[in-house]
Length: 425
RNA sequence: GGAAAGGUGGCAGAGUGGUUGAAUGCGGCGGUCUCGAAAACCGUUGUUCCGGUUUCCCGGAACCGGGGGUUCGAAUCCCCCCCUUUCCGCCA
Image 1: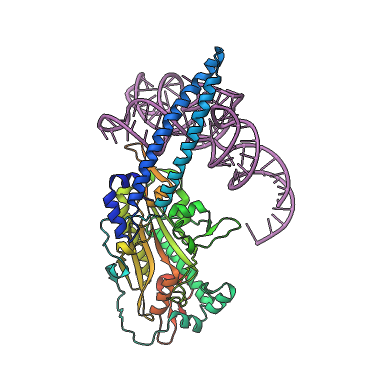
Image 2: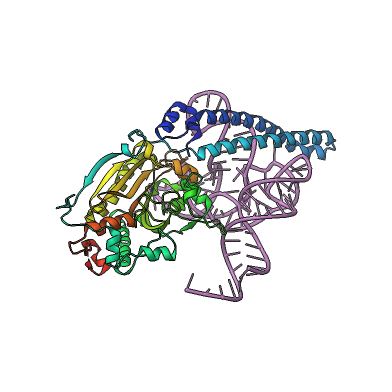
């Protein structure tokens, strides 16, 4: 959520920012509602002050035998007027809140202006030693390979749940688990995160807090009976750990990492890139979340991208880093890097991670603050999160890049102690 | 699923329909004392919004789980909802 005060003081900058993000211009509407709001507040508070003043005198009036009938009648009238004005005021506030909740975050000044993914900027790429984009043999894609090696069974996954719910079998299941454990351990041991294992069903307040609701509601599963949402990412429960809290400055930056399955309806995206793992309703992800002081958040973002990259370097999987342009940034993000891994069978890059700085956008929604020692005042923290990483796309790149001409898969060395085997097939 | 109890400030815990933002204790902050520390004593202690001065200083409003209601006036009475705890049942 954007800060209404900031909008009030910088309307033209915000207007331009919304335009850059391909968002509707709601500035004039907000400003006029805000003005109305303040005028109603002034009126109703005047009346309340009067009411309080009179109320304070009533006990004495009663004691001294003063006739209170006239005063009561007058105060009754004032009370009705307050109720009426308060009603109007809350209508206005609801409207403002609704608009703000549907208004996206603004991009940071370092983000390139652009309208679509085509204008994202490649920042750097990393290729393992001896890597070549030319394939020496016919690379089987992950669905063919999964079937051949009995490690992935998309047909039975579909039988059990529906399309987009993968079944990992045999060494495929073990490899998946190994990846998750490896990534968690790596972040814990080398990057200073604390591990969290959060609930994967969350309430509506949590979904609002991180910004999935109201804008993305259609993409979320929902368990109506209990009012709970299966999480689309561990970002939701982990960021909400500190909802409605005031953190100590000395504890920042707080760094959490956690594994969770992720559930996405992916409404309306059938047919496109939907083969095998490329677009699924359930997948596994290790997620990094940070709560930082505003002045540190952009350094923390760079560090987080490096943390995710280190996983890929350790696995020796080719990747590139994209800085998303303003038009491709997600609703809540101020700046975002995507990490894409190479798929030789698809002959393209696949998004395996996304690391974002939300600045105070989520913190304002979720009311996550810290108390600065110097000023003693609470301030909103900046929140960041990034996948470190999502296993499904990573698995595609891994199976394809580690393929042998015989159609076997070599297990990356760093995973050996987790899998207990060195080759599949 | 059945039964009961309860939700008050950072925490613990009082609270009679009327100057109650709210007793008291702990914690925190500042001070006295001390070579220093502890103890003791004194003082202080939330958040948000509006307005003014233009900054944390003054004035005002709101906040005792959430939402309605009664009343001149609600933390206190009534209704609905949410949550927590305990016991019983069921169960990975």
